[in-house]
Image (cartoon, rainbow, N blue to C red; front, side):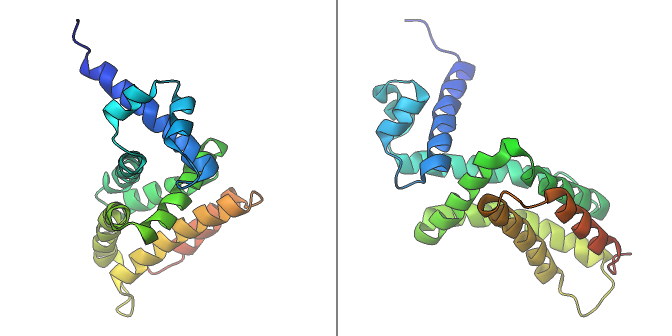
Length: 192
């Protein structure tokens, strides 16, 4: 039997994860069955189980990938201007209709993090890295001694999470106006 390439295996694994993510975004983690994922993926149940022992394994893989992508976008820069630009771009992406399922999935992840210590740990790692990097940059640039850099970084995390949640709940959110308003607030702040 010919050996299957690593690229082929990775693509097949991603196909399963994409199908699972679509099901989870549509129906939630707990209402989605393995049979739903098999049907969505178009792959046999045996092959799905070759890659993932359980639905929880898929959830863990999706959460890890999701947070790695977001963390990479924010920690790839090492100056305050680059971080601010990357953050505003992340906020802009929330308004992209193509991200709607990802946003719904993100809210599912946050809910699951309340229930599952493993998911909570992954979610915390996905938030804590960018938050710590932002706090370090704020510490270097912010000139107000009454502002705690870590707390301000948490405010920026909360703004992102709040925008995601509002965007999932309310399709009338004006993302462009939101980002412009936040950018203006940051411009007029005490950053030097």
